[in-house]
Image 1 (spheres, rainbow, N blue to C red):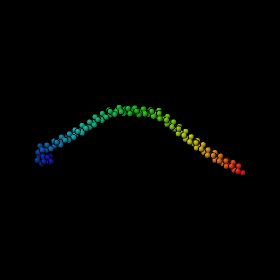
Image 2: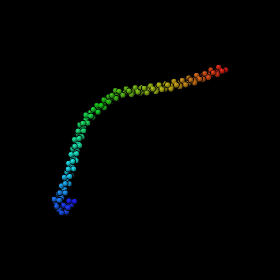
Image 3: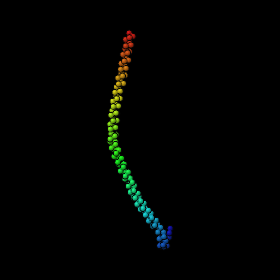
Image 4: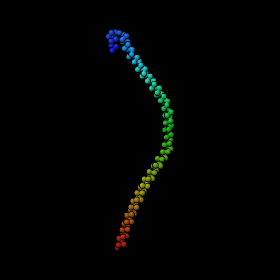
Length: 121
């Protein structure tokens, strides 16, 4: 409002008094943004410095785990595959034995029936 009145009256003092706080405010806002970006750059650098040793340790742990996995898990996987194969073979053989026993029981019952019929005669 003071700016408009200053323009109407052509009073450079009124114009200056209104524009001065606006310019100072714009300058301070720009300065704050610049300081904030500088602070964020410093924070990022410090974070990178703090995280770098942690990343190195994590990489070392990853390599150790890969070695452990290679040395420990691969033989276990082979053993598990062998157990699965043996289990399937045993299941098949057990089914065959059960079928054979059923057939044998049928044969024994059939023979005992024949013997009973011969005794009756």
